[in-house]
Image 1 (cartoon, one colour):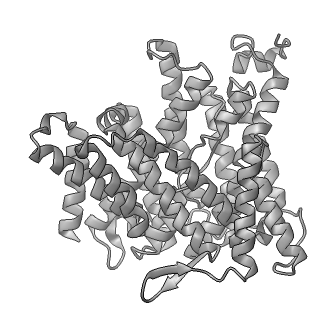
Image 2 (spheres, rainbow, N blue to C red):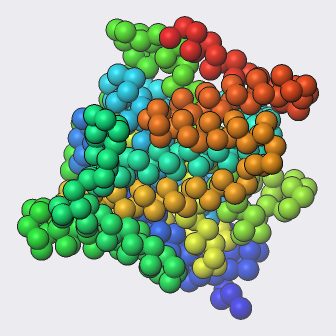
Length: 447
């Protein structure tokens, strides 16, 4: 039975009403943090490829996660942790900056613009319309495609695959320590996860880093220190450049970037929030409870505002983390769980020297493992229906092979609309699909 909670906490988070207590919520918060804290090491590693100061990105990541989780706790009273999203950070670094030629300041401006659009979609209810209109097969393909995109990045960072003039890619030199340590880290994470060890991904990253330290592959800089300066990324976003004001940029390019950010944010965050909320019993299966629906709406609002905060601090889009389900499994039912997550991300600011020691091949196993989990979505595609299967396959495959989440989305939506149209099933296509497919066609036409 839940113990009586202090009156202030019970009043704020309604612990008694949800059949929980402070101890349970704290344990749940610690559990959620352990399962998602790998992002404080992975995000600086990914965004550092754009030329951003990794120390500042580390601070921005911790603060964005803390602010997002705090807003989720107080505004929605949901046991959901927030942090810069995997996949979204890769799109930011390797597509928007790396392939499309944006500066990282302009990319931050694009995140801000997408956050505004995301917020408007949430306030007006268009977000629900968009979610309802996108076919399930494409939603599954988007998640799986992002997983493959993360996988190819991980394999590159770990030097398990290298460039080849004849075959494009080839197996790396397995006699070198970097790919071997990456493989060992990946297997360690998988084994620990199979045994349901909390913080398995974090343990894997730290184990590879510690081994690299013993082998003399990285330099020891300490474990705890005051946080580095946030100044190199704080308020450095270039909104004008993101909107096409910068030299060489066009409305089509801006439209392309913002559409992709918004679509991925919409599906990632909404799907995560619904999944975690239902697992916690906070969202009835029939979605009939008006009070619960209002609460879920506040959670969507919190998720939207967190994106804006992250862009101002200097990081890619912040989103709800599916790892929050681990905290729910541990008994978390209220925003007190998210409040604990926020406090622990603030505490993580003291571990910047440790984050600075983590080499790219130590974060690669985390990327690869998350990629593997995301590929499970392919099981939900209707493979027996070619008008569903072919667009899903194109969407999934185009992301890693064109090195762009955006291209994968474009191929998937356009193929879906075309196949349905020319097989006499145009009425099955929701208006949202026609709109998104049309915008991508315009983008390619104007490119």
